[in-house]
Image (cartoon, rainbow, N blue to C red; front, top):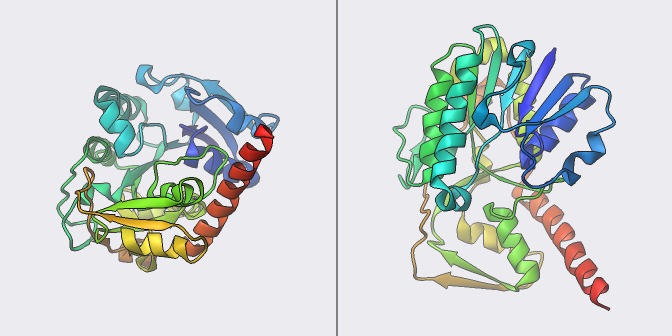
Amino acid sequence: MKILVTGGAGYKGIKLTTRLLEEGYKVTVVDNFMYGYEPIMFLAENKNLEIVKQDIRYGIENLSKFDVIFHLAGISGFPACAANPSSAELINVRATQLLVDELSKDQILINPSTTSMYGKKGVTCHEETEVAPVSTYAITKYEAEKIVQDRENSVSLRFATVFGVAPKMRLDLMVNDFAYKAVNEGAVVLFDSFAKRTFIHIDDTVNSYLFVLKNFEQMKGQVYNAGAKHLNYSKKDIANIIHTHIDYDIIDSKLSDKDLRNFIVSFDKLEKAGFIPQKTVETGVEELLKLYSFFEYYSHFKTI
C-alpha cells in the first residue's frame, strides 16, 4: 500500500509518517518545508520514505499512484489563519478542492478536521450538531470538510485541541502554550477561563489515523469527533493541572477571548467504532514541562 501524507513535515505529520514507516508502509511526504527540513531529517534515510518539496496550491504530481492520502497540509490554528486569511482560503479550501478533483473514486482520503467549528455553543456537541464556526480557521476547515465528504471514499476526523511533544513543535496550541508560559514567563493570563474545550494527545491523533486506515470499510463516508469525554476541560482546569507540577501565576482577565470556544464534545460515535484515546492531559503536561525546562536550561547554559 502506497501512502501520501501532505504536510508530512508538520507537527502531526512527522509523527504520523514515523508510525506508518514503523508499520512497513511505503510513504511519500509532500510539504513546502516553510519551517525547514530539520524536523524530518531523522527519517530521510528510511528506504520506504520519499520526500517531495511541493506547494499543494498548485496540485500534487503523480497523485494517482497512491492508494491512501492523509491530507494534513494546511494553515492550522486561530492565530495563523487570522494573520493570513487569504492564504488560509487558498491552502485549506481551494487546494483541498484541487486535491479531491484529481482523486479517483477508489483512492482513500483521510482528512483532519476540527471541533473548533462548534464555536461557542456551550452545549454537548455531536457530529450532527449544527456547526457555528467563529474564526477563519474553523470556517476554512469546515469548507474543506464539506469538499472531502462530498466524495464517498473519505473520512474526516474532527479533532479536539491537540497537545504534546513532537519533532516539529507548535506553541500556539492551548496546553502547549500554557505550559511554555508557565516555565518561561512564570505566568499565564486566562481569557474566558470558564470556557470549556476538549483535548487529545498528539500520539492519540496518530493512533486514530491508523485506526481509520485499518477500519476504513466500516467508517468510510462519515465524520467522527476525535477525542475522549475524559478530556473535556475548561481553561482554568488546564492551568490548574499545570500548577500541580510547577509554581506560576494564573491571572484571570476580565477581557474576552477573540477566539471564544465553549463546548463539550461527545465522542460516542468514535468510541462505538472501537477507538478511545489513552493518554491524559497530565501525561502531556509532564512531557511538555520536561521539554521546556530543558530549553530554558540550555538557553541559560549557552549564555554563560
